[in-house]
Amino acid sequence: MVALKEDDPDIAELFSRYNKWRQIYGYAGESPPDEAVWDNGRLYLRFGYPYPDWWAYILEGADDGRYCVLRASTERSIAPIESSMGIFSQIKDAGKFLIYGVAESLRINCRLDPLSWKWDDAGLDPQVDAQIESDRVVKYVLRSNPDTYFIMTRGDMRYSHILPLSYDDLDAQLLEGFPESVTSRFNAESR
Image (spheres, rainbow, N blue to C red):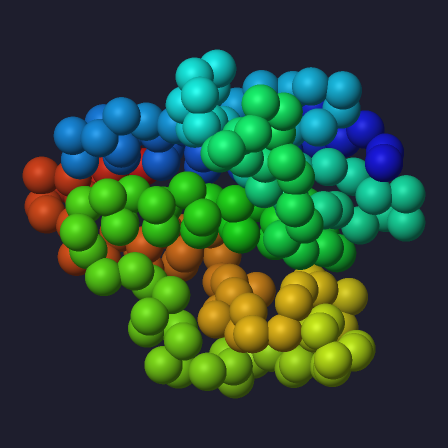
């Protein structure tokens, strides 16, 4: 593991986007996730910490220059159990994946259809190639820029839709279906 740099502009962008979604939780009448925190060079986006059954997304740097997203959970465990969610070639794509996860949780809490259903129905994003690496692992590569990719378990094809999106495009899709009382406040603050 390589420590992430707190002053990296891509990390700053992720913090900004995460804090916007924390505000959207409040606009929607839900308790927001905890503030993002650093611990040993890793970025934690926690939900419910330090209470029992807290969970988190973790972003860490890998020795090979890529970025790993993990999920930690204390459900039925005293110590957090970590599992890998994916390996990303760029922080911004890992960041979009994290924002998707945070926002998708809110969509479900608000009884909106998960965006993943739409993406599951669409299959592989047409701007992305799926390169089978093994019977369990797929590398999703942006066709217009082969250096932009992520590696995940087979069956996670819906996430291919994140790769070609900007943060703004992703936010727009994640906000679909929310009432105007939520979206108008988000749009007013985004100006």
